[in-house]
Image 1 (cartoon, rainbow, N blue to C red):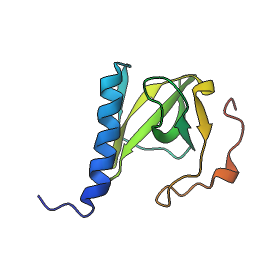
Image 2: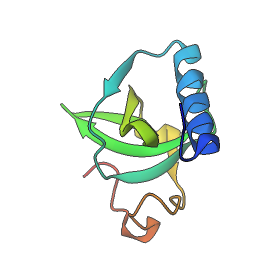
Image 3: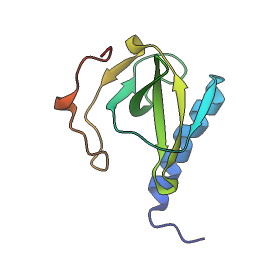
Length: 102
C-alpha cells in the first residue's frame, strides 16, 4: 500500500503505541479539533506531544495519526503538560495559547 509520507505515519503510530502501552484508558477520536499544542512533562506519557481538547469537563490529549485523519485521546491533568511550539502541519501558533482552564 503506497503511503505518501511513511516516516510521518511511523512516528504517529509509535506515539499511539506508547499511549496503548501506558495502560491509561484511551478514547478513539475520529474528528481532530484544533487546540493547544503541548508536551507531556512527566508520567508514562512523558515526551508525547499532541493537541488539547476539552470534552465533558475533561482535559484530553489527542495524538493524531495524520494520514488517517484520526487519533486517540487520553484524559490527563493540566499540570502534566506544557505548551510547546506546534509542528508546521498544526496551524495554531503557540502564541495564541490562552489559559488551559478556560
